Image (cartoon, rainbow, N blue to C red; front, side, top):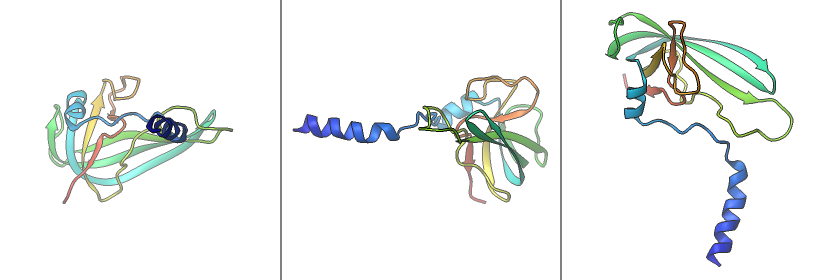
Length: 146
C-alpha cells in the first residue's frame, strides 16, 4: 500500500517540477564569485524582450558599495552595476524543463550582499568577458538588515 501511495505522490508532483537551478550555499557563492560587495541599491533598470518562446527581462542594479568583501578595485562609496535576468514562458504548451533565471531580486533602497562574476563563470552556463559584473545565478543576492 505504501508503494502505491508513493508512486501516486510522484505522479502527482513530478509534472509540477520545472528543473530550476539549485541554489548555491553561501560558501559556494563566495567561492564562485570574483567579487562580493555589500551596499544599498540606488536604482534598478530593466529591459524586456521576447526571444523564441521566452520573454526575458534583463536588469541592472546600481549598488552604492559599503564594503568589498572579496575582489580588487572596488572601494567604499563606489557604484557597481550588477547584471541579472529573469524569463517567463510565452510559448504554447507546457513549460520545458529550464531555469527562470535569478531569484530574490532586489528593489531600490534595499541593502544587499551581492555575489558577482567579472570575466568569469557566472553560475549559469557562460563566462562573461566584457569586464561587466554578472550576478552569480540563481541566488546571488542576499538581503541584509540596514
